[in-house]
Length: 171
Image 1 (cartoon, one colour):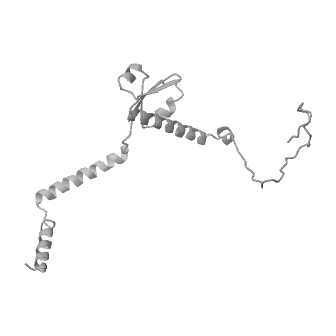
Image 2 (image 1 turned 120 degrees about the vertical axis):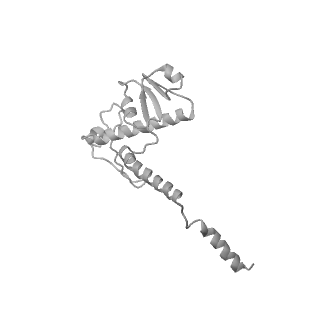
Image 3 (image 1 turned 135 degrees about the vertical axis):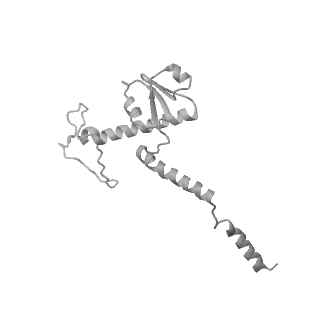
C-alpha cells in the first residue's frame, strides 16, 4: 500500500464518525443544552458562591467582631458553644476576649479569612465616613532635603542650654 493510499484511508477513518450524529445523540445533546439554558437564569439570580458559609464561627451577637463575621458570606454565624467547638461543629470560637480555632487546615484558613474580613470591614467603614479626618486621623508629610543642609522651622531660636525647657526653640 502506498503512503498516499494509506493517508487517504486514515483520513476517511478519522472523519467517518465525526460527520454523522444519530437521533439518540442529537436528543441527548438537545436535552443537555435545554437544562443548561434553564439553569443559567437561576444561577444569575442567586449567584454562584462556592464558599458561602464554608467557615462556621461561634460568636455572640454583641461581640465587636460579629459585624465583620456576619457581613462576610464565607462565614456562617453560630452560637458560641464550647461543646460545638470541641465536637468539630465550628471552626472558630470567639468568646469574650479569647478566640480559639481548630488546629486543622480548614481552621487555619478560617482564621486567615477572619483577619482579611475584619480588614475589609474596617476599610468599608472608614471609607463611608463623611469626616475624612475622623476616619483617617494620621497624615504624614515628608520633605526630602539634601544631606548636610540645615533646615529650620520658624521659631524664636532659643538656645535651650539650661535644661529647664523654657529656652527651647519652638515652632
